[in-house]
Amino acid sequence: MLDDEALMQALNSTPVTDGRRQDLWREDDDVDRWALAHGGLGSAGERRWLRAARDALQAVGSGTSAEPGLRHVLEGVRKVPQLSASGIEWHVEVEPERRLAVELVLAWADVEQRMPGRLRPCENPECRLFLLDRSRANTARWCSMKTCGNRLKARRHQARARETP
Image (tube, rainbow, N blue to C red; front, side):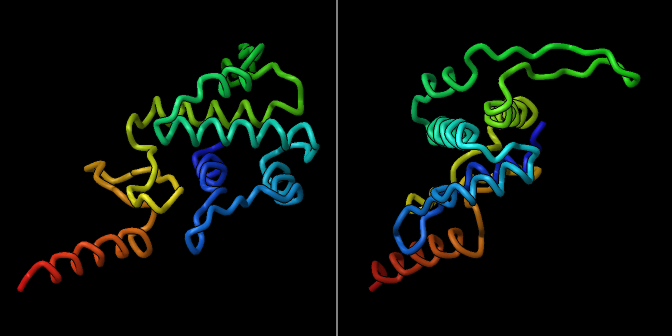
């Protein structure tokens, strides 16, 4: 199963740089590197499934309906229990090239269940990154205080300074 860090890497693989959306998974080698680092195959089919899952999860996180995309990724998937020495372990039954994409969706569902409302897009409208708010107060607003937070605070300050005679 993928962890929170892997989920965030996937969700944040389309940053905005110099006002333009970048796709860090545009090149097949880049997706393969991520997949192989997380137990994947590095195959063409796996890349298609991973990109589809990422795009659907980004849409959900941004408030856009992505039900058809998620339904497509999860279609026919079964999660079955298996007994082990440590108790019951749950395993996903799906074809190998789709397994990592399904695990990505399951990692998102796990975060949503464990930390409801804490996985959200950055409040900077020019940013496409997501944040996982681990603060006690659940008040984080930006993916990074150094970039988005400071940038927006500076803009508000400059706007107030222009309004003051």
